[in-house]
Length: 187
Image (cartoon, rainbow, N blue to C red):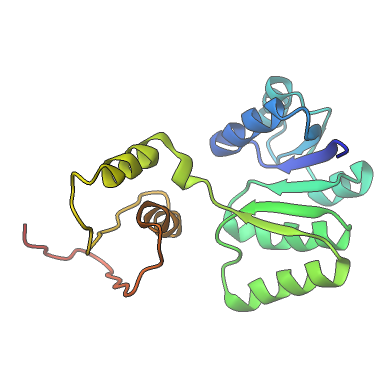
């Protein structure tokens, strides 16, 4: 397999965690470019993780670098347009969940990827976080008995938590209840 040229959009704290991993996968990726609207942050991340070029404009980066893979690590509302831009530039895409802010936007993303013959991965990595792996070991040990009911509370987005719960249980939910605001819950 050839080494893929990967370009990343986003240089915030979470993006840096991913870039640290990308930098270690030298048998799979060559970190060709990094794009962030904050030039200083982009320079610091590029130096730390070995990105070859720095941009502040995703479209310019995609056109100039022609990467094999685009990894979008910016807030969800910005990722949809960047995902479509990458697809239109015939670049395969990795990005975090959720796929989009609405179903219609998700359908547009999928259509653009299909029309341009590119692959789209909606990545989710919560289940590999150390505290999630610890939870999994506790459940697998049997110390808690058979789990019939689970409550979800995540500060980083409930969509991350749903994946974690599926991974912890090893199955899909049969019923999901959602609450907004404060709910009195008896002990």
